[in-house]
Length: 124
Image (cartoon, rainbow, N blue to C red):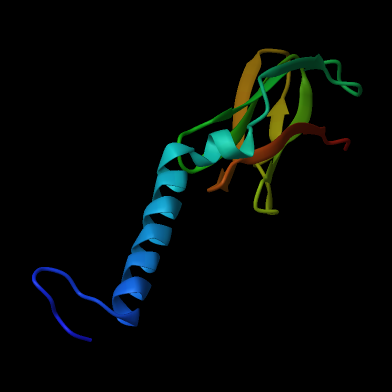
């Protein structure tokens, strides 16, 4: 490689410029879109559970990592199941709700986003 006035010439210069361009393009793509936006976390959902008839809401919280959460009102035995975009599935500790009331539980530690959040009713 030879050096001219203020720049390098030859194959190595082109390889370095190409690598820098790829790095810059990849960095811009990653910086421009957050993992949550790329994964498209589910919107907050409300429903009544089929077994215990609890009124529940589910959603996704956190900024990094992301967690799935659920808030249920009524009496029942349940847990939260969070399916991550990366393929992992996490369950919360079981929640035993007697005599009504409202409780919230969360599960997951999803780095790239959440695919789904479910309330799983446990039958004893």
